[in-house]
Length: 172
Ligand SMILES: Cc1cc2nc3c(=O)[nH]c(=O)nc-3n(C[C@H](O)[C@H](O)[C@H](O)COP(=O)(O)O)c2cc1C
Image (cartoon, rainbow, N blue to C red; front, side, top):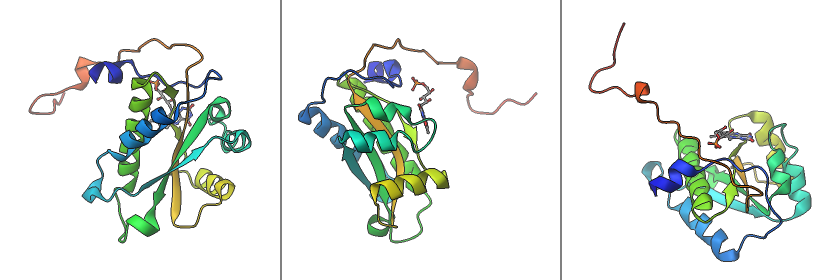
């Protein structure tokens, strides 16, 4: 587990190899196993394989290009209308936990992925919602292109001891 976490990298270029159904199922299982406030699990997942839709999603903002070369994309949706009866201030954290589980489950299965942010930027939400014809209560949170990496990416160790304090926060 720790090895998967420490070696995960963002993958933005993919080979043509398709993603097996069993691996996709495991990805979605991992996503839905994430913790969420009050266990409300406000998420839904739109799996996109259609090249035209992937291409269109890659253009919703200047940083979404990785979407177009992937075997598939998973758009993480928050169905506020269905799962969040009251105004819920934690839904983005719920969705982020699911997204991270997806990234780790992808890497753990030899796949690559990258987190392409949609929320909380209103223009991105509006463009993705229009493109995917989402009902008003369903908010696109992020999208993850997924596929077999075109090339392996080395780990990038980031542990920095000076960011950690014990018992009290130091003051100059
Ligand atoms: C909230 C969030 C938003 C991100 N948005 C984008 C994005 O729009 N486009 C992109 O190519 N990468 C995006 N990334 C990926 C980051 O650039 C990447 O995680 C970071 O550079 C660290 O590299 P690593 O994932 O290889 O460890 C995003 C990551 C997070 C957590």
